[in-house]
Image 1 (tube, rainbow, N blue to C red):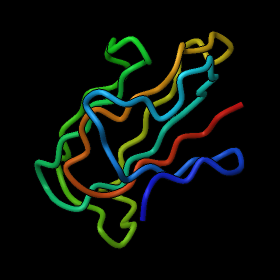
Image 2 (cartoon, rainbow, N blue to C red):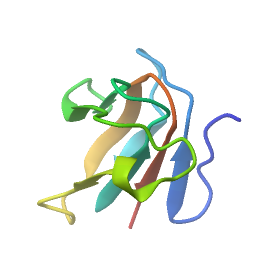
Image 3 (tube, rainbow, N blue to C red):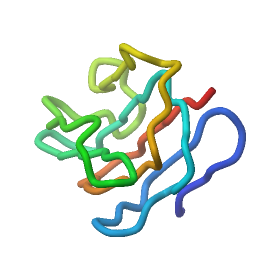
Image 4 (cartoon, rainbow, N blue to C red):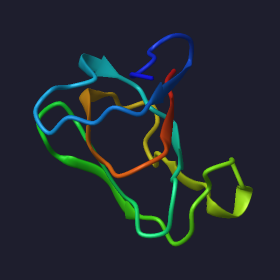
Length: 99
């Protein structure tokens, strides 16, 4: 599919260890990952390569099963990240809410 950066909820499914999804400051109040299978890995970084969220799926959510969806909430939603990189995505889609 390719990453979609339209609207307030971005849909990301194409990782890169070196290319940012966006390189400008961005406020991210929350993210939701719908992994394809158990033991899928996700690593989200800021534009400088600093970890924002690192997680391994306990169960999959290939058809959006609510039990398998993993959620991250930003403790400081008004503080922008300097860019965003989807470093690792073993499977599924990452939904990034921006403000």
